[in-house]
Image (cartoon, rainbow, N blue to C red; front, side):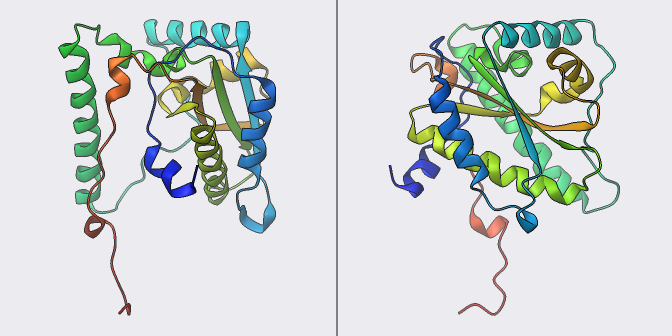
Amino acid sequence: MELLEAIKKRKSIRAYLPDSVSQETLRELLRAAVLAPSGSNSQPYKFYVVAGQRKKQVDAVLLNCLDESRTTSNELHMQREGGDEKAQERISARRTELTRAIMGILNENDLPLELFARGSFHYFGAPVAIFVTMDQSLGENYILSIGAAIENLILAAVEKGLGTCWIGMSLMYSKEIKETLGIPATERIITSLALGYPDGNAPINSFKASRDPLETFVQWIGCD
């Protein structure tokens, strides 16, 4: 598969087949991830690949936290003070559009809305969850290197016929995730992924988010 084809084909998958993903395939994806550029070749990430009974365990912990409305323990600053209000408005509008579209698909197919509302807290039933951490001492700039690695992994997954969903909502309970998986307190969970083979019959997987036109994001300066 050509790279641009994989980029265009990629979308977030929110329903998975129960089929396991072989360790060799997972290793190939991780090798692709660490080939991504990182600042000063720092490679600041650690990957925790969770499957089987341990995946079920972390799912149960997260759903229990959600049901009990536990105090959140997200280790990232999700929003900063200042900035342009219009930027926040645009992002809020995009989030609302995505939620309405997915809820619409569920309603049309008489499916429970909790498939989406609770999905992030059990990784939409994917057989594999990947948690990516970095050391507490590292600054926010290293998150860029982690993002590049994740994108490499996601595109390699597309080539292998696998689906992914980049998940941040579950990190509301980072403390509980770390305790469950034995992740050291000296590390911050930066992001996580659901990974597995897409369920081609699941209506929720028919959704593919739109993108705004380039003019929304791009300013040409000195370009002919």
